[in-house]
Amino acid sequence: MTGEGSLGASLIPVFTRYLHDSPGEVAWRFARRVFWDMAVVLAVITAMGAIFSRQVVGIYTLFGGHHAAWDLAVYLNRIIFPAILFVGLAAVATAMLHSFRVFGLPAATPIFFNAALIACSFGVVYRPILRWAPPAYRSPAVALAVGILIGGVVQFAVQVPALVRRGMSFRPEVSLSDPGVQKVARLMGPAFFGMSVYQVNMFVDTVFAFSWRMPSGSPTSLYLADRVMQLVLGSYAIAVSTAIFPAMAHQIAAHNWDEMKRTFGFSMRIVSFITIPAAVGLILLRKPIIQVLFEHGQFSGESTQLTAHALLFYSLGLPAFAAIKMITPMYYSTQDTMTPARVGLCALGLNVALNAIFLLFFFRALSNGSPALASSLVAYFNFGALLLLFRKRYGPLGAKGMIISLVKISVCAALMAAVSYAGLRAVHLLADRQLLAEAGLLTAVVLVSAAVYFALARLLRCEELSEFFLLLRRDEAAEAVAQSAAP
Image (cartoon, rainbow, N blue to C red; front, side):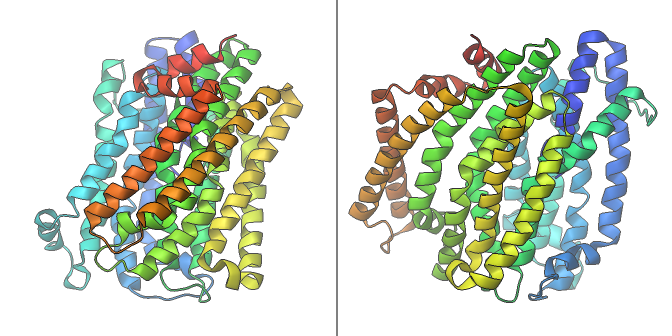
């Protein structure tokens, strides 16, 4: 929730205004104050989370469930919680760099985070770490928790030099009375909830997954299915969202409302061009994907079935999850953080209600997929409500052009699905083979399906095809957005 984007949603519009109206020391003094004020707030949250670790972990068993490894979970939570401080400060640094339209370095920071986590999964690294843990907690999981903490530190540290080069000084300067800081705080409260609706709903899903009615391993299956879906959402949809937010902020500052709407329309088309076929592919290939990625060691065939079942229902909502990433920056660029928060609150209530209904009345049919289905349905509600409200306030958003694009994309995705299904049956991907053979066959099916999809898109003259390949050049993402959105 801290690093998802609420800080950027509130900071980028205000900091951009400072850079336009009061460049130099005034803008950087504001930046320092925001940074250190956030550091103090996050430090308090970190301390409270560590002190009340047992209560935090206890929330997950509100609806029953098992208390296995309870003490270990509390210990791991105390190690991980300080990462919130550094991930939050990394988010502040990212927002400042985005205000200068610097996207490459912030986008690469998760690589360093993952590298630290992966390094701690090797015995040569985690065995020395475990010597510092109490005997009762000497599990490799402890080393992974330390890896998360180290990753958070590195994620922030790698951005510091880029900020310093642009004029940032990290001299401590706390000021809650600064007008700019207060404006960011007013925007950040609703934005914190609005941007983190997905994480809150995921937390609700996890709580319900711990119910005694759920099969053993349901929380892990939901988590892994979400990670697979986030591979598409994070590598593409969030990247486009990151690029269009500063562009929209500049367009609103210049009162170019029509240009801002065109930017939104472009982002929706280009993201739908990838997420719709990706959702279809994940649904069809969910079992071999999970099998290749995870079915090793103690991850059994039963675990694969559970995770693939959850991935089916999460994949149904992938286009909606991506669309929300496109429409919320449009609100935040107008410095309206309250509307997404209000809609998010309604979505949260709907998610709780759907989870309860599915658990009580449709458990036999849905099993561990019920929380994932609830989240997917809520995502469509969330996007639909935000779209209707924005259109009511600011006028048409070019729906006709988007509908034509969606029809073409859906036709291409349907034909691609037929090819994927035929390829899956032809190679018998689920047969008992070695890992490398399985991975090779899966890669071949994915590549052939993607080639068919792009060929069909070219045949149907989908404009998004050329725009997609332009956006693959990450360093020109913001310029591509602006050029494609221009009249």
